[in-house]
Length: 163
Image (cartoon, rainbow, N blue to C red; front, side, top):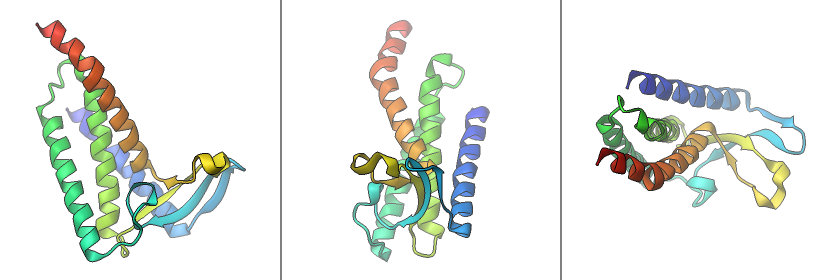
């Protein structure tokens, strides 16, 4: 369990450090010109910038959702059998989900406008992908994919081996 918590803390620290640097220096830079850019934006809405406009009630609702998600992921993480190597992917998924949820929740709670700092911009994809995101968003999406794969494919295999 300790290595997963260490990874979680490391991922969260990386997310917060990158957001701090981008926001402090208001970085806008083309890493791979015409494809990958660092574009500093503040997301006052939900995922993919939907429902823009943070209000006190809105921030409270998002904070409650984050706390509920953290509670669920935390219980799942705590109940995991870390000694069983077959739960490696499950532990990784939960580690990513907790780090991602915390990363964006910290922004919601502590940024003056309650916005999430986003900066990864694949503008070279044109209309195919117009969203700007951050590392916490990456953790959440990758964590969800791994969790779905684990639950729908690996869990059945673990149950059959256990029987």
